[in-house]
Length: 182
Ligand code: PNS
Image (cartoon, rainbow, N blue to C red; front, side):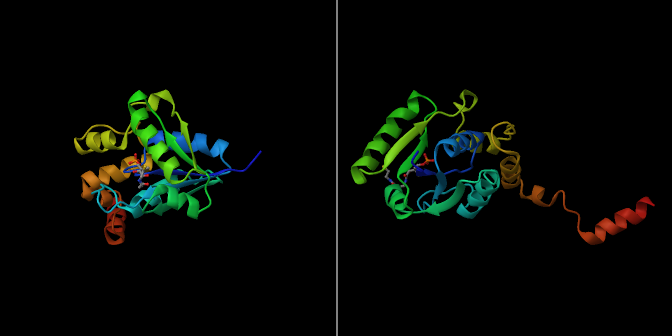
């Protein structure tokens, strides 16, 4: 069977369990899968590109054929540059279909050799989106089952920067604390 290289482009702000589910499915059918984060200067993302990249790298470290890159400009141009012949996109519900169809057809018009492959994430993720995860986190809701633990932790830190240091005791205080105990 032909080894197909595919890209999975997106904003991933933040990456969710739905994205991970799709990456896992894609890694099984493509020879190589490049998760491609759009560097979009017009958007005001919650996470910077480097943060999203490191989260996705950690999430996908168990997949031998998955890598994470960033790109700007047209998806089709980036795909051609790296020798990909397919674009992977997820469709969660009918509501996704119209936008995804439009994008797939525009991409085909721009680059006829590139094929868009749609996959459906597991049904428990059919309501999940980065936008809703951001909103729930910003309003203090529980996001534990929606994103991997490392992303949940990063979200908690974004909402309350003090948490970043909550579990890290400075060495001086640590030794004093130990002395007190004995
Ligand atoms: O995760 P998203 O925000 O749904 O991803 C959308 C993305 C990044 C795939 C789309 O906006 C995109 O491909 N942008 C790059 C610019 C481009 O190629 N535009 C023409 C699309 S038809």
